[in-house]
Image 1: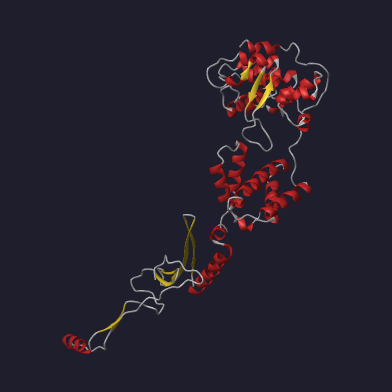
Image 2: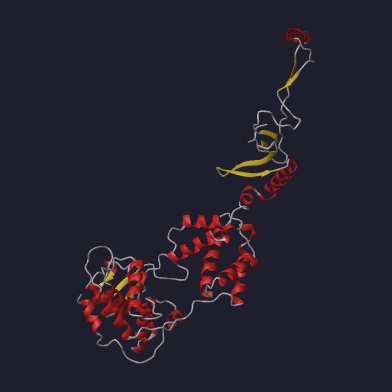
Length: 414
């Protein structure tokens, strides 16, 4: 019987006709006489039902959906293949066994699963974590750089090879323990697991068989048990002396193509993140209102389309207007290149534990120290949540410590 015939419980399968032809005894006798040998009449059969392999070494059907595959050592293996078309897509369930009895048992069980749960549900049971991640990466091309990096790491790990149907509370907890054992911080592990569970939740709504309730329960337990932690609240602020050293180092480097000094000073007075600075556009600038549209501002849930109008301080606006208008972007530089240049000059003057993001922190705190209320500060920072805004408030003194700072006029004049 052809291997691609699909059978399901209740389906009628025609039994192949066996045609037998017996040579005439007279002719056989004549042939035997002519050859000088005596042999009994020979029976030839086109169909074989004795379960033996053909001598030509080719595979053959021994059961509906089961092929016998000859091996080099004379031993056969048995491949089960059940095909089904659903929604225009061809689905196939295939597995090979060393014994015919095992193949028949697997086929019977698989047909029963298809009958009970449906073809699509059964077809998803062998999908892995890596399969789900691949689907999301292919669909969501706008994922952030950190999210993509985290998903690719999970995809290439041993966890990525696990079947989705095998995931459980213990499996996800073990993954967290393994990551912590590699000296990752709890807040870092929290980031990896959050994007992982969100991706698997996305996959579960698109036909993948994922025990998403168990994974969400695992996350709740790990937060409660403090296995995971929120990002640490930094209170690191640059001193005027530290900024002076970094900026002097930048200006001494004549090969520095990026106007890094301008970007550093702008980060302080605009309260902007580095990624936001490199996305600012000339068309979004409103000089008369001292405002600019910050596209795709960071948001805990809304990754794209969170465009916010932010006010500009006089210093920030002056730096923008000092930039040459050569294209679409005000600061047309790659985030990675600016970040690398910042770290190189920071390390050159031996400034410890100061991140570029701390410049935004400094800018927001400066406004608080100048006596501005939270509602006023939020117009510059772009915050919509007061709780998030107050994370940046570490008031140490009253007044503007940047009053008369020479670098404001120096970078504008460059």
